[in-house]
Length: 454
Image (cartoon, rainbow, N blue to C red):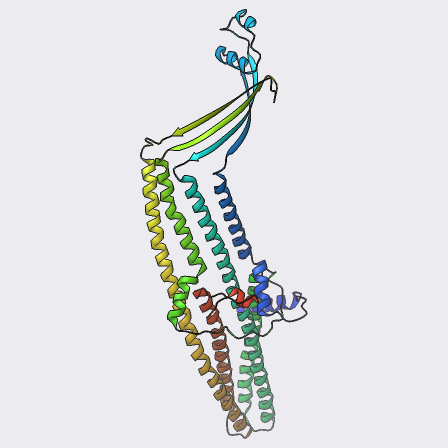
């Protein structure tokens, strides 16, 4: 079932246009492209900008509100006709007493009102909402910066996986070519009567398996490039020539230092703490409803029987105070809810902090283990190459069978793959450790000025 899928992937990989590049794509360029184009980065930046406007919105409640309204009234209510006629400036005493005041003609009135309201004291509500908006804007900005770090980490991981897939393909092709050379040698020996035909057939079977591994490795290259393009914000069919992966950033210090760094530097953890502080202020905002609310309101009205007319006009200024005496216990319930929500947030932050510490500890252990595995794997490759050299020499002398040579080939191939995996695991686990601990990765990989990474 896998072979048709591989064939389709290879055909697609061969037909897509290669991205025009003057030089191979470097890791630094890939990270910079992702930070500019990745939808997650763009969305997080938009969220941060939206939170900033919310802060301006909250600040605006300290200033006066100005409203302009236009209304229309058509009535034959005696009291309203009398009052609106006065407001229009058209009251005529003779006409009033010469008619029946209890049955006046219907009157049309347009009222244009300019109203200004200025809050003076709200029990701390406006100040608290401003503080909350500032904290939420800070949290959104921290989250946007964390998203950049996450995208840099994911892009570096995808870039490493793409270079790993390309190198894996090179290793497999080299092993396939070695097997093909051994098949040709076996045919020559069989023609000379030095080995039996069965050994040639065994070599051909092994070569067929190697061809299948090459096809699978080529498909993995196509998929790895598509995954890289996903993080870069480019069409997935774009093909890149990749530059050599640079060495992993340095890792110094014990695990405890990296864990302490994580609790202090992880931007998403800092964002959650800012959100918790904003939530903590909700209890203060709820208690503000128990304090008096004081304000001033002024209005200026135009009255006429035509739209926006000004035959009659008047103005007024009113100071008002309002005290919440009883609202069915809803205020008390809101205060209790805010306190319980804060308690819940504190527990979630504590759990999140523990999870960040565990993630960092795991990354440090994985990186430490990967380093030891790479050393062991590199030594194993040297031993497998020497064993392969000896087997080739013995086979050429007729001392070993083809199966022994094929076993040596398999051992060398597997050793090279283990070394390849271990080497890239070391790089990837280093990226993971930097990201988990909150050490700046975007600046280091994106080519900007380096931060205070370890």
